Image (cartoon, rainbow, N blue to C red; front, top):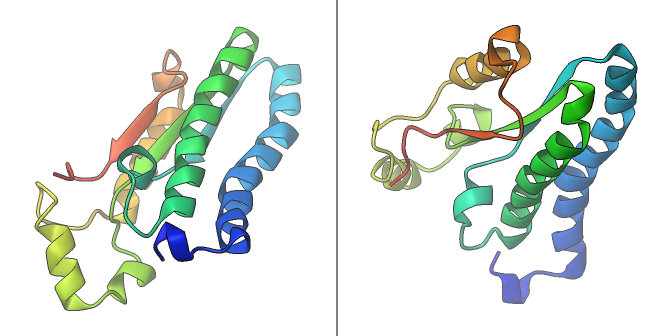
Length: 150
């Protein structure tokens, strides 16, 4: 829905769910991780939070906010050995993307260098890496998993 037609409740419903939910969960778990002197929080953003998208002002703002929140948390809690990173998926093959009309799928794929939708496992692999000790010096980063949207 274009922003001029968007009602306040439509905007804030998405922002409160995506950004507020990320804030609330982070607040709960970071305390326990600080006590343990270790932890890795992986927030899920979206490539739309980086690029924006017509008709998705609320979604784009919420996902961009998650990226900024991730960086801020990383600076606040890094000294306590608690890392915060984000993943920004592009179009991933899910039940939701499977329901898109074929013409829209073709338009999307025309703008993805790898010419395919990503698989959920490809996002999970990045999350696994970010949660592992192999990424122990990665903090405050956003990893884009989008097949290079062009």
